Length: 464
Image (cartoon, rainbow, N blue to C red; front, side, top):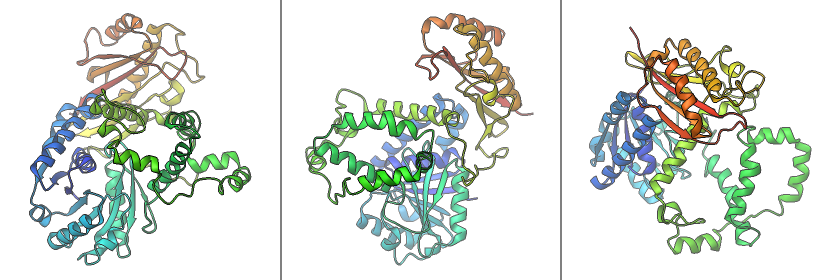
């Protein structure tokens, strides 16, 4: 397995990929043309690491180690000369990419794996003279790459099957989900699907049928609501191919087949309305912090990633098998699961562990006091709900070889802050008067109508 990486390009995606690789134990050299770009990238990486640590995804020592693994450089030739893994994430400009691959090809070792995270360009056509084309491919990450699991892997005409397999294994080791295409096609899969949806959405806005808020309401209350439960093609199976065939026969001739950007979007771009980064786009963000909005997006995305397994339809027989559990000392996450806690004892009853050096970090995520029959344990009594949840947490920790004494942080998510005194009494009893460091309380709306509390815990168990 390759243990060091060079990331070329220090924009949003380059910084995110550098962080992803560093968190999973690789020494990373981040390359950009200017020191200003690198300083901005390091600031983004520090902010993301701080966020992951605050959410219990990284223990403070591991967060510091991840930051320490990222070095910067402005000399591309020197950076790639000895690299065995190069990840290119520069501007989506064909001419810029073409020049970059000429430089990388002139200096990289013939054994290096070189991957582009382009979102749609044909890298293989832009690098016809690349010296080791069997080691060149596309690995299209999604933003933010340290949270969104998908990576689309696209081999070129000369890419070897061994390099594709190695890339897939590397990505799985980083906690990603690789989806490999048989060959290059513009936009790959995700961008094409996204583009088809947005072409129709913008066309409806352009024709005055609705506005951005109307599009988002329809998505939120129907299509997006259903997709977390059923995958897109499963929706078709569940609805019936005969039914969808009839609908598509009527609709395919009606939906937009536009081949140019609509005037509404061209006008907005010309006026500098780029979206969040400029303060306005389809919506007005002026007066709100872009950094705060992005961090809130990441927080909500992270919570959903932790909890989505509860909502998913059981995978079909043809679905790809999940990656195997992480082995000790790898720094990768391993799911803690078993019939004694799972859905039989409480909704969201789950956790994962990460082996780091001589310690195991355990994160126990998002419990509701729901029993196997879907009944809220304790009714509306928040103290009894808390007792049930702490019992589930204790069993999950035990399965990972830890105890409640190893807990270093707890977070209570309440529907009403007035419930906290009763919950605090239970917590003090559970921890025998010992307050886990960094105890936090958040008031939120839980997903179960009767539940009043969720509790999360982070434990660090030092192995002997």
